[in-house]
Length: 192
Image 1 (cartoon, rainbow, N blue to C red):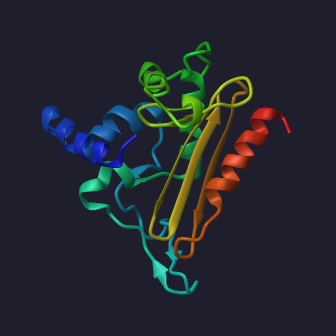
Image 2 (image 1 turned 90 degrees about the vertical axis):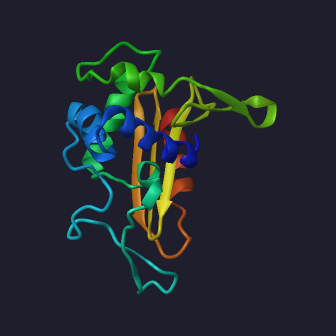
């Protein structure tokens, strides 16, 4: 996965399709999934989470991400993240389609296929959009991101049908959300 690669891909897709990134995301992903609370770029200020600087008092509102819009400016509600997780679990290559299978099933399946191996003994892999770590009875897939004042984690374990969506505001760069959420995902996968 590369933020830079996604930042370059988005305008190329927009140019080829003749529509801007927000329109393409809404038409081809958010609409079919029914995730109506998700936007690309800053959303409604009344519902946007606001983090804080290290002092814990100075607010840091969400940012638009400029040319990295597609790589780091998706704003989703917790409910929409869970809907997306369910669609990913339904689409996993090892499983049959569930009752909520979406028209995006094949695309969501494709982004779960390992593309690159690295790490000690090449045990860690990456898909186009997910970190893919070995886990009990099958891989743990996850991705995390942060902007100024906010942190997000989304992960799932297809073999057990479990997932974790975690969101937090943070002070400065201190936040243990990713480690905590990953630990919870691993515990759910092992049944501990």
